[in-house]
Image (cartoon, rainbow, N blue to C red; front, side, top):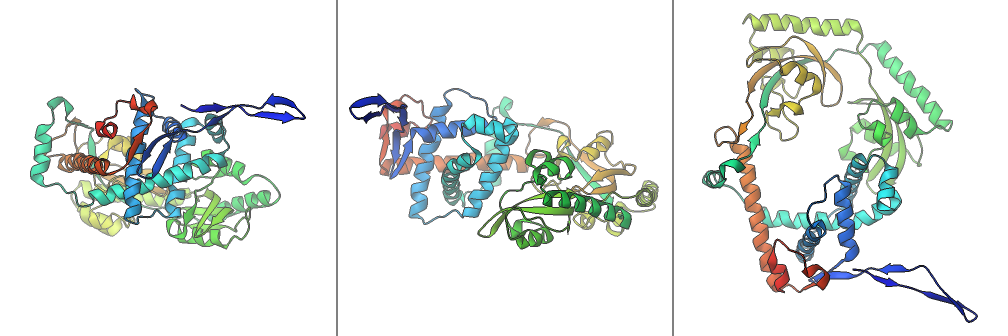
Length: 446
């Protein structure tokens, strides 16, 4: 696949051969876009680094993906589509985080790719730009694709019975939430701990090491508190203000209060309108008196609701401190799809432990949980509905089936577009890849 070149270096008539090196080979051209052997190998390594198993001839699959990607890119350039640098950097950092999580550490990732983290980033950046540009072109092609109810029914009726997807049990849950107030002493304790850590960093200790040990941010143990490049709009306003105020790499902020808790922030780098920072997050703990007050209030509400002396909807409106749900009877919203349905294993762990033993319509006793920002809350929940695991059907799972049908229709639209473009585009495929069993055989007709 690659040609080996051996250089001979001569000094005063004496010649010795240097180390051989590999000459990258162009294995395909789509329009004006070449595909090199290293592109295929790199895509294969990325796929495996994400934890996907090797199946069949995956390099042929990667090759066909690249053919389609180049075709989409050609059209994207004709249509003057662009991808912003910030989009590429966000995806780059997300992808690297995923690689590191799957492999176990940055050091293992560097060993896997046989490159430093900076070289890996440089290699990925161009590849990700091309992938994102191709995806943007795909969205342009499919933006007007819609599904009618009759098409959804037709899609469902065409599915073989043993291919109808299995739906896990799903719960609909409402809650009433109370945030126990933090005492001045609890806040002072957290601030003092952060001041002590800030002093140690300034005196030369590693910010990353202390973030791994002390930060209450969920991924800190793995990332050393480091966040990807982010713009101001992606960060809490107070956090963003403090991060942008830091001038030099390595500078450490004063204590910053955000909606997540209290932080100290270290500047890693700035690039355009984005900043990369590390942070250590700590959250005050409610004292026993505050907890007793919160649970006592919830106990009272539970007794009144169970005796039908207080309507659940009214109790939610007047007493719940969750501003996102108090106006819709406390119905919890699944952040994955913005629906009110939760697969049981997608619930917050503390919520799951309570809900798994409840009956439909039952109201729980008060218990401690966490909100979406990781803050401690006390709540009661009402199980509104719970479905058993089942094969998808149009009555209960219409939205799910609609998404599946829409995906199939979009894929068909893309395939038709690709076939039209193949007929009018210059396509060259090297003999080394003509052996591949491509899913779209039109590539090999050119």
